[in-house]
Amino acid sequence: MVEEGFCIMQIIRDDEYAAVVYCPDTKCVQVRWNNGEGPGQREVFDQILQLIQERPTFTYIADIREQGVVSDVSRGWMETELLPVAIMSGLKKVAVVVEEEIFKQFFRQPAHPPLTQSPQYLEFRYMYSLEEAQTWATEVYNYYDGRVSHVA
Image (cartoon, rainbow, N blue to C red; front, side, top):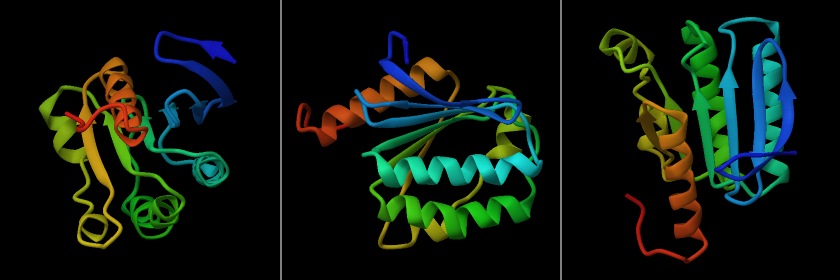
């Protein structure tokens, strides 16, 4: 376990594909992607899904600033197969940490129409820093825990 200002984080994985941590204090899975496509990418996603299914998880933070390009096939698989199971397992919201550069933002932001039009809606937020995403995850936790009446 590692203590940060955000919470005490349980390290799940840290390798060439991704660093995955779970924060029990805010029920958040946080991933820093280190690579784009590769044989380990789906393994990481499977591990994240298993984590969401086994532990209460309200939010998922994906820091994709170092991820590189993800294929349409992989993105489609994530949106149609992985995320619906995560939603059914209790995931409420996703924060994606991106570069501020407009060009990168434009090409990295998926539309997510199958998710926003389904009865099991999953909210996505795009943020420019990990700290901003962690603050938001704490606000989400406080909302679902009944400590506050709304999330900004």
